Amino acid sequence: MSTKISASELTKVAKLARLGLTQSEAVSLTNDIEKIVEYFEMIKNLDLQKVEPMTHAVAISLPLRPDLLKAVKCATEMLPYQKHHHFYVPPVLE
Image (cartoon, rainbow, N blue to C red; front, side):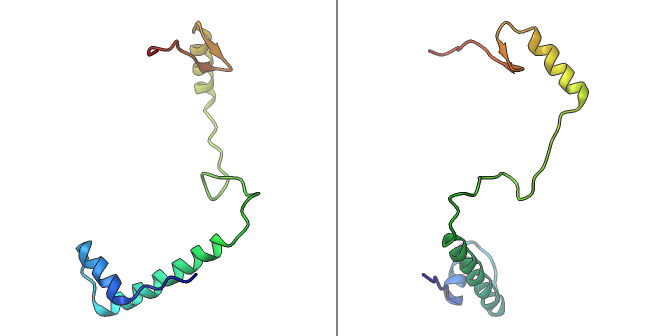
């Protein structure tokens, strides 16, 4: 399914968004939007069942500084309810 957007439709949307577009800008943006929609169509047709969800495009690691690890460990050791260095508090609403 190919969705086409005309320069006049783009100009109408730009006017509603209070964007001033020249005719050449509208034609250029129309071509760009059509390419973007084509990419979405390609992605929509891919089998992504086995692809794990991710929060970043590249793998990142954000380790805690050693002194922060000690502070968290110290703080959780003083709590009456803690497990695996997580803070547990009794419910306040029933």
